[in-house]
Image 1 (spheres, one colour):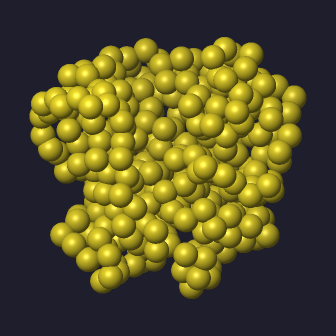
Image 2 (spheres, helix red, strand yellow; image 1 turned 90 degrees about the horizontal axis):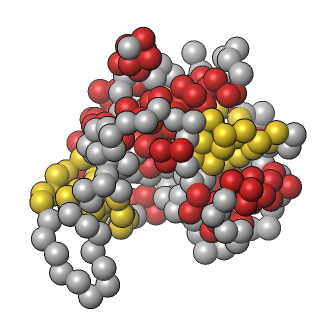
Length: 305
């Protein structure tokens, strides 16, 4: 069983259903709100645990009613939450999410306690880093913490995976050298490289730019098209099952958690990504963040069908 450590964000998702996405200067009606545990870090931890990995999380929540709900929901999936601190000087992270009739979403994140996850807090919990096989991170905590933890993990010989969302305005010059695997979507890949991702050729070209910068493996998620696996000597598109899309929230988080949950097994990486595509297709057919994430037995039953 893979031992996965997630360092990252925990948010209460405030979800509003809309017919179409709001435009600048426009006022529209919505349905809701629904309050659903989320945050890219918590989603990854929840999904990894649901898919059978031994999972721990380093994170922070605030001094509000959301804190216990967020931590308690991770516990229901089997995540070790011993290193999630409840602070008294700030609120828990929140995300206001609009989901339209096509299942697409737009998200506004309020960092709250996530901004308090500092390098010092990583040092306080260095034993978790020493114990894990794989470290997963995202960009909803301070950039300096992401870089610091990645360097520490690489020094310890761990596999380091990054979901680069949201993409910062600027990155350190040596940033990509600290990651074994990075999983952007098309929009994030374009933001990271400056290369338009309007064709498969450009997607591969942009991914190879990240490899030249130091990343070993790039997996570009393409929604209903599947995912592009790009490494130094190969680039292959791995299709995804076609399903009716209800809500894309947490699909990318679950995808990379599914990859991490199987990464150290005997399967080729292409088969691992096929599995991740299947898990993500289940997620987008449901509503919400962690409420949409399946357990391993559900995925296995889906594959049998």
